[in-house]
Image (cartoon, rainbow, N blue to C red):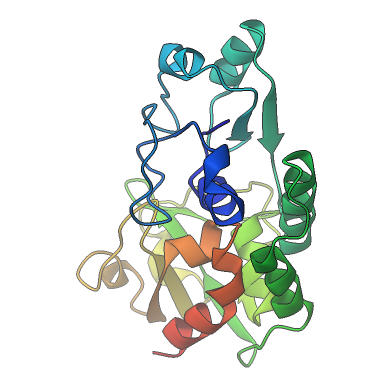
Amino acid sequence: MVSLVPSLTEAIAATDPGLLAGATDWCTHPVGLDVPRVGGTKWPDVARVLELAPDLVIANAEENREEDVAALRAAGVDVWVTAPATVDQALDSLTRLCAVLDRPDPAWLVEAREVWADPPTVPGVDAVVPIWRKPWMVLGRDTFAGDLLGRLGVRNVFAGHTDRYPKLERDQPGVVPAELVVFPDEPYAFTPDDGPEAWPQARPAFVSGRHLTWYGPSLVEAPRVLLEQLAD
């Protein structure tokens, strides 16, 4: 099979690396993964994917374009498309995927379910979570990352917004009523010198985008890693 989703590439490799015939250039985990590459998540080389003759392609409704999924299906390739908006949905989706792979209940997935059955939390805090700038975009309603943070005690001030990824006006960041600004390192690589200056009213916290937005083996250590980073 070919995976077009970095987090699911990691999940499949952790379950049975022999199942992977290809992955995107952005599939960075596990480190040292040696499989043919098929371009990016947004612009995969569809012809290259077809050359690998996969029995299944793994995609995600947000990370991959509908037209690429349609082109693969039109060529006769089965495509599994995921779209979890909560931690529970992600765990259920991973369970179904592992069943399709005929590798049910891998150890990492069993552990992830145990960890998220009762995760540790921080004292409730109101936060905003930027994911891009120029223009500023933040997590809004019904997002996996927003649900994950909520499970850890972080209240997203834009959770009730009509958009899933609201765009902010140029001066809006400085007046958003948040105690905390959670800066992930992907998809935009925020740093102490690039981001916090726009949010002087709130404490910045820099977190691992992989642990915030990926669903797969990273879910096992995500609560510990993120809580440590949120407390810094």
